[in-house]
Length: 171
Image (cartoon, rainbow, N blue to C red; front, side, top):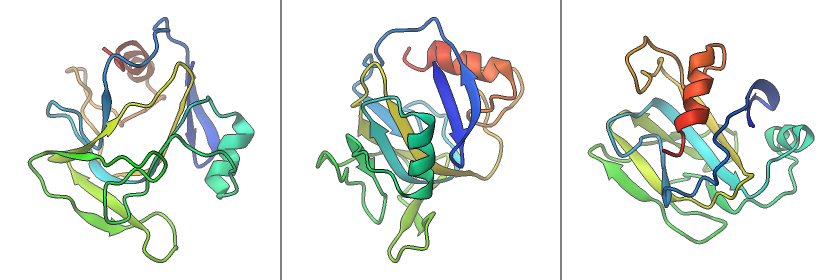
């Protein structure tokens, strides 16, 4: 199952026949894939948990009262360090890293601002059940990886978006 939460509240759910472990790729792209698809917007505080968080745990994460430790955490507070695993993300693409004010009021909080010209390659630490959490602000709709119009990343209002994501996320 793929569940999407926005501001700690359930926003979409999709079931997929793709039940393989998401380990076909050794890494994920944050802000951009290896090809040419990327986002125009900002990403902050990317975390991976090695379990599927419950509704209550997701709400606690949104409120900042969570107690689970992620297996990977990239705060993007001026660098590409994984604060949980001690790894460092790799800059990919042609654009330079651009840091902007982060999602919180915390002193020193930064976010990465993307313009579809670079991304960050991070190690895939996912297991069969996992949670990916991050703060995202999209500046404009994103083109899908196929030519059937446009939709925002994770737009569960359109069944073809959720179906594509669940069927092709690890191909």
